[in-house]
Image (cartoon, rainbow, N blue to C red; front, side, top):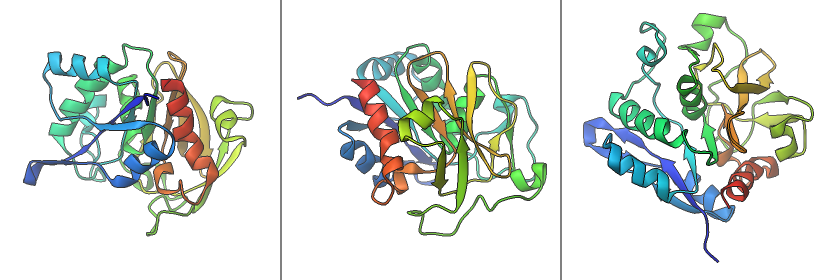
Length: 234
C-alpha cells in the first residue's frame, strides 16, 4: 500500500553548505506509517510548486531563530542564531504550501514559523521579554518531559492525544507573542507561554513548541501527533 509522502523541511548549515534533518523526525514518520521526504533548499517558484504538489503533508522542523524582520521587529539582544538562507527558502515554500488545505505538523521553530506566516509576532527571548518562568531549555536527554502543558478541554489537540494535560520536553528560548490571524491557541505552559496551536483554515494544522519526535519511544501521546498527521495526509 502506498504510504503518504511527508515532506520534512531541513535545517541549513551555511558554513558548510549542508542541509540536515535529525533522524528522530524521519523515524517518527516511519513509525506512524508515512514516507519521509527531505525538501531541498530553494526559492525557485517552479520547483517549490512541484514540491508542494508531490507531498501529502509536511513537518516544519526545529532549528535556528527566524529573523525578526519577517514579523516587523528589530533585532533584540536575546535573539539567537539566524539562518537567512533557510528563512528565504522555507518561507517561500510555506507561502505556497499554505495555499493548499494539506496537513502540517510544526515543531519548535515550526510553531514560530507558522505564527509568522499567519501574521503573528514572537518573543525573541522569553526570559528577557516576559520575565523568568519555567526552564524552557532543558538539559539532555530530551526523551523525557520537564514541564506540563494544559490543553483546551475538548480542543482539537486534546482529542488527538486523549487528554487535556501533557508532560513535555523543552528546547527553546522564543515563543508566540501576538497570535497570527486564523490561528487558535490550544495549549499553555504553567507560566503562560504558548505551547500549542491550530490553524483553522484546514482540516489538520497543528503546531507545538516542544519536540514530540524525541519522545515517540517513551510517550504514547507524542507518537499520536505523527499518527494523526499521517491519517490526515491519507
